[in-house]
Image (cartoon, rainbow, N blue to C red; front, side):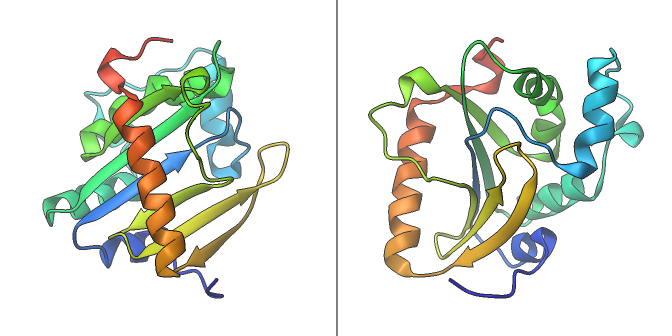
Length: 174
């Protein structure tokens, strides 16, 4: 594994063909999302038509990559019934779609025969993985990079198996 982890936007900016993201947790305690999650739980919903109220640097990085011709896909493996956090993510996924991501959902009960990464990850151009490590309570711990070709290949194949089975966002109901 490589030591220094560049910011996500830098990794995506260096991407030429594809970026895929696998999420496997039912709860995240990501500090920069805490306020939005609390507001969502209190009933706040963003107006998708009021882009200025929700568009941020992440969305712009995705949109820039897609404009350059990079295919960006996200697959979420989720337990059912869904946790509040997954319901929150589902309600805001149209923002990801507006930025240019394709998003699919795979109920965990349909993933039992698949080999899945032990950590969430991004794979850039089938050459580099950024694993995201989380504590048991969902708090972010660290990102680590991996570029060993055999490891990247196995994880890319695993992602494709999840993607093929997963349900497109517009068809997945919570």
